[in-house]
Length: 273
Image 1 (cartoon, rainbow, N blue to C red):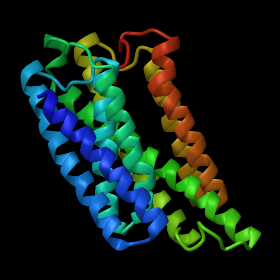
Image 2: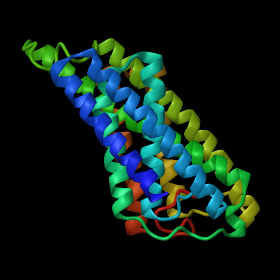
Image 3: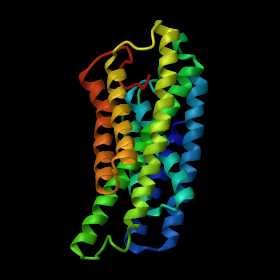
Image 4: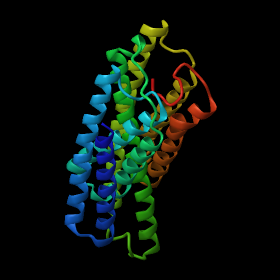
């Protein structure tokens, strides 16, 4: 199956090249090529992950390489869905390279898969992992839209109307789409935490154990909850929402990487459970 994963990497890399060509040339055919290559890569990636699931008996997310592979898969799939729904072409310049980088890193860090363990064979764990990764992918896209918003806002304020002005959507569209990403991400993360609590109860006999991953996942949840509350009650839109989405992503990356490097707990290194 290594050849299949290398095909996935090649498709993601070519998709990133297609979207970059679309950014510079603004030809619709480059956008279509980038999208279809990403979509085919996502389908093959799904097959690869399902194969790993069938062999190991659980989702392959128990070392850094496997975790990055799933992260790249989640970003590619969720972005493809968003492009279909919102016709958000320009975000491919951000999403496709991220999927490519994640899968390339996964290949370079590839290690032997973890053998099946009884505690890993749980439907609650399956749904916990899938929803958390998809929620993280939605927050990743929200960060990208936050960056795009700030770039477009600066372009408009400077009245330069140069390279980015004609290539980026309106501020209102970027803001509303970023909000949709945060709502979806928050909903999925909430489901992920809830199913994680149930799984923890069945395995360790308690819903919460103050594990560093649990604590920082809770902090991430609270931060995005504050963002949604601020938008609904305090009018946090536009620039404030964009900055908060970027800050949220930084906290998310610490939860994803920093906790595993600097802290220890029963979740183990580079795993989402």
